[in-house]
Image (tube, rainbow, N blue to C red; front, top):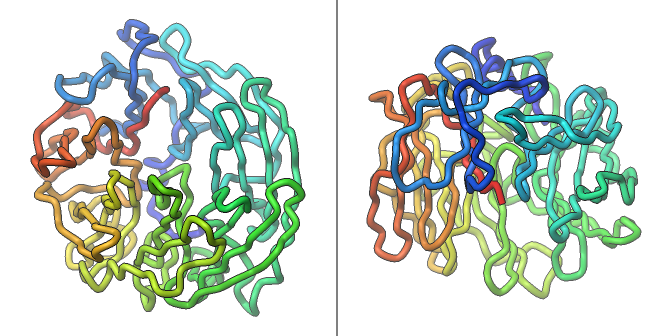
Length: 400
């Protein structure tokens, strides 16, 4: 659900293009391992690919692919070297070719936007969309991204919305314990620019083949279970198969501040939420949080706002306020990382690889830096840096 009021400036920051895009001076580097999605100070947008996040300085205008601002936004899917996005009634596939992002395939997908997605193997993508007219019709697409064709499309008939909460948000989707589980919530429109969510999390368990609903469960400990995961990560499976997700009732997602941001669990051999497990992040940090990334060994990193550093949603994205915490999932222990305040309301700002967490931060001194957190030693070092043409680093992704 994306009806939250945002300024014209933030709208510009959220709009990006891949169609007809061109690069400046970059030499094609087909072996690059990582992609950085950047919003520039000149209100343009850039994709930069690099081979390492550990060191170096990037001139984004000289080394990046320029993206005019008409057709695309940051809610992209990057997988196996390709870029996917829904825009102008089509789900589109892009690749980097001759220093530009070129569209190579498209599937008709009218009047819809992606609420959630996950991969079922290397070449099969599951997409959950909501119509952009009523915000209440949930559709499922199973797509072969190699042949780029729809293998299955179904409308999922969730139970009728409670009174006055007429729209739906899908917060997570996961294949778990031989079932497809959807976490969702219902929203109420307050006026033409604002909404809130109901005070309950809902969980639908479906047969992954027929998509028939087996059961609906709910939990009132928080609301908005997860978030739009093409924008930011909110859930994961651990090494033994337990599934964890974050609830997001804060001003930037659920906008139901009476409920806490918290971490919940569905155990490996279960299909229902563990009634005895909850890490109340709001109690630990006195704030709401958005974004959660697994770093292994029953620990995760979360990104938390600071309500004493912003006024309301209008300056939420531009204020240097975001902190990062390490969460010990089995000990209910939350520890702040020694990092500068970050800005940007929702960003895919953490990438975990080879025992390190790479964290992108845009700080108050106009540094746009990747900080390297060694998961075992807990030491923090500087990594790759972007030049001052950068305004926000909104995504860091593996290309392959």
